[in-house]
Length: 134
Image (cartoon, rainbow, N blue to C red; front, side, top):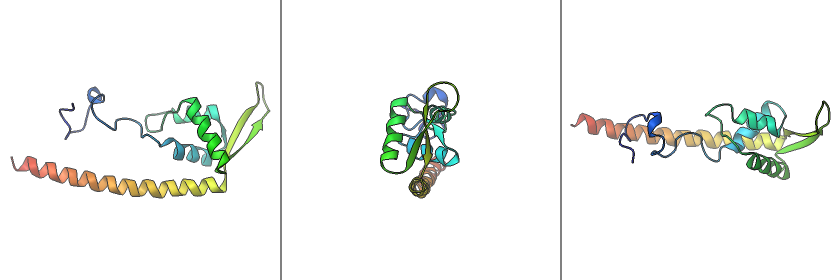
């Protein structure tokens, strides 16, 4: 159990507190954002997603299932890149529908951030006043 739930947590407490690390279910908007920046093949997307703790890591199976689902839904399209040495690779790019979906994600994320900010303000106010009352 976390013994310092009202303070910032250090790395030694990461095993006991919820919500540490990457945000679950956040790979979809990141993939769309990366593809909005430039078309890419799956391996490149996986590398870019795994660059730091702020982006969601992805196992290859989940990444490619998500890309296939996006393609079925018309959010991305793919083509084969046969140039260069090595086997052909599928390159993904975002569609106009994918951009609209990405914009909708951004609106939803802003709303979620506002709710989180309100929660944190209420939390801080409660515990700050409780500590001042001691």
